[in-house]
Every structure is written in C-alpha cells, then in structure tokens.
Image 1 (cartoon, rainbow, N blue to C red):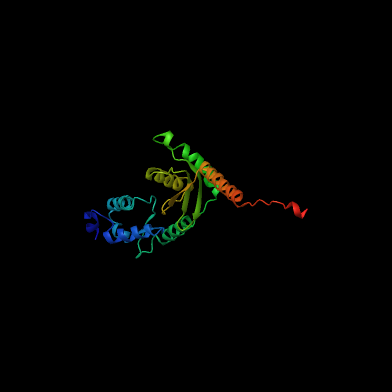
Image 2: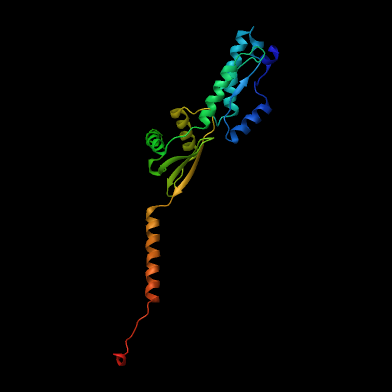
Length: 214
C-alpha cells in the first residue's frame, strides 16, 4: 500500500473530486479526511510528502474555495477523531456566519479603497453591501445605475471577506442588483404628475348660472 501511494500521481481520485465539487456547488461546507496514515508511520519522508501534497491538490481541483481543512487520521488506531470533530464544528459555524449591514459597509469602504481598479473613471459604484442569508453566506451588492462588478472584482471581494472575517473553507456567494438613478426616477414622477394634472383639467366641468333663477 505504501508503494502504491508513493507511485500515485494523484492522491484524490475522480469520484472523490466529483463529490467534493457537488458539495461546493450546492453551497455546503467541506472537510477532507485522509485515512490510513498509520501505513506511512515507518516512512517519514513519504508521510511528509502526502501531508504536503493533498492540501495542494484539493486546492487545485476545487479552486473556487480556498482554505478547505484537510485532516489526516488513522481509523484503526483512533488517531485524529478529535481534530475531525473540531474542523466539522468550525466549518459549520462559518457556514452559519452572519454580518450586520452596517459592519459590512464599513468594511466595504476600506476594502474598495485598496482594490486596484483598471480605470477609476469606469470604477463600479457600489451603493451598499448586505448579507441576505447564511448556509452558505450570501451577499448582495447594490450597484448604482447600470454599472456592475466584473468577475475579477467578485473574486477580490470574496477573497477579502474570507481573509478579513476568517470564513475560509466554505463557499461564499455574491449577487448583484442595480439601483435606478434618482434623476430618472424624478423625471418619471414629474411626468406622472403632469399627466394627472392634465386629466384633471380635461375632466373639469364649467357651471353657468341661469339669471332667471336669481
């Protein structure tokens, strides 16, 4: 078995990758458990190789989520059980994580100032940022007019959220919504009022008094 692991190019097989990707796509948290580490006890060099390679491979096959915890255990010897439960609980707490809108918008002002925009003139105008649900944490950016964040901007915000609030290892979703410009709304209201006044004038009837009735 040790020789088989040593010669193998991939530590994670196709079926395991598909299960992990499906979990992430459905918005679930993920903890990777590597069993049978007791088989490598006599080969320290190979043990270190496996412990270094597996997290890197996990990150390669699931690039959209960073910081997925990897726990090395031996079911036969009972080693690693506490670590598994620790990471499961921690991942669940991150999955249920919530932030207030006020805190998010204070954070947003700081994080937007450190992002290198390609062109400041065309920089997207984010009006405010809020969390609409947990499990997984889902956020909405409300954009001014027709501006919108690029995929690069979304990745930057996602990475910053994970780093600044320590919620790595779980999927995070960021949606975009546009806010109509106030000018357009104002003009629309004026137009409606004008139409309403016009109808009132058209419908108004003029009463003429009869002198004989005086």
